[in-house]
Image (cartoon, rainbow, N blue to C red; front, side, top):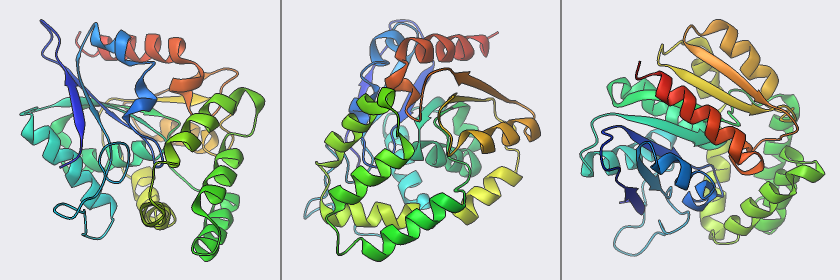
Length: 261
């Protein structure tokens, strides 16, 4: 089972589950934990191969890495903790996992908060991913990761996010990185389906104004999906919860609180 931590609120019965992206870990939510704990029960988890969810001889996550199998990892934790329903907050690739949970287990999802959401890989992104697949066994994985981190988060004010994700990526094994990279390179059919199908679960997209790879698609998605809302954070790139934590926390907590009414 995945490594995870829970934080219980004295009175609230509502849960918020945080899902990080590829190459990260639950530590990327350190700027959220204190504020969210004031209002909700919290579940922080490390995806397989990340953080403290390291494979071992007895439980090596040997099944094929698919979005469905990784989604099941998360559901197993939620079942183990007897959480019937949760709000889900994700960043980057974590938003794809959350959307997949909503597709397969809609009754478990109270709402979705999608930070730096990925709903389409544009032509440039697809070319970069294909080059990565070709060279992934030749070039050290950390070089590839640094390159992609720079492409997604190129500006000076994105430096903290880049550094955080590269620091976490150093903890990955080469084999794990290749598995996740291959998984990410195959997501376009799944994303096409997600864009076409309105799941009708309350969804807040929180996107950086400078998230030029992914923001244009999210604008289109929000226009088509009935209960979706977009909040754009100025002077901010892809990893909104790290670059602008105060704005992220305030707006997400307000959104989640408004759903109670």
